[in-house]
Length: 241
Image (cartoon, rainbow, N blue to C red; front, side):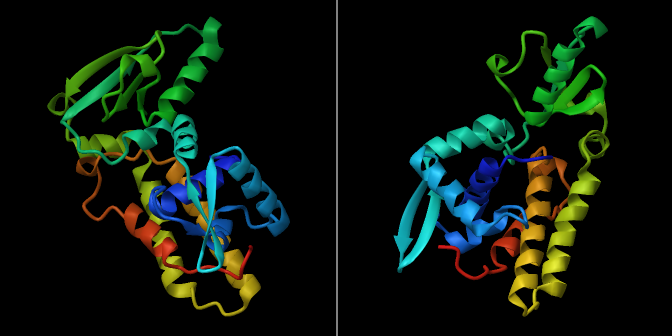
């Protein structure tokens, strides 16, 4: 998933402490693409501070940033599944059903993209499932939203693996942990920075594509949170203040 530079910063602040903790500038820098310059980074963050999405603060003489409530709302508007992700499952699937003809293909494709952003997974071409209860106002008027008990759709974990790319997501999260465990001892500053920025990029793009399913639908050893913690503990690079 291709992410806007602004969204990478908002995601980075959200991940670093779910918006509550301040993030050092040299750690926030790691969430931007490997070739992005420090000068452009400073200009980007300054613009986000001016627009009220990010707050700047100085802690022990070092520049830190945190996500404002406005920034949090902006991030959630772009990635609405964050508002529900990880909540306990009530045992019901929400089934989105629609029938939009080929003559209205643009509308149909836009609806599918919207459902995907809400964390729905495709069961069939015009039938999507979600583990979360979305209000009707969030969905298009083209959609009929039904509820189904999980027993009518088979084993829930098996169904989840069929609908969402959980194996691929899990593999990237595990690779994040493995790469940090085996290669974090890179001493040369430039190579270490490049290594960390690529790891942050891969993790972020994977997380942005993650439907954030309830724990009841994931493997007991789901590696997503472990990868996040390892990444946050990986340290930072030289200052970007």
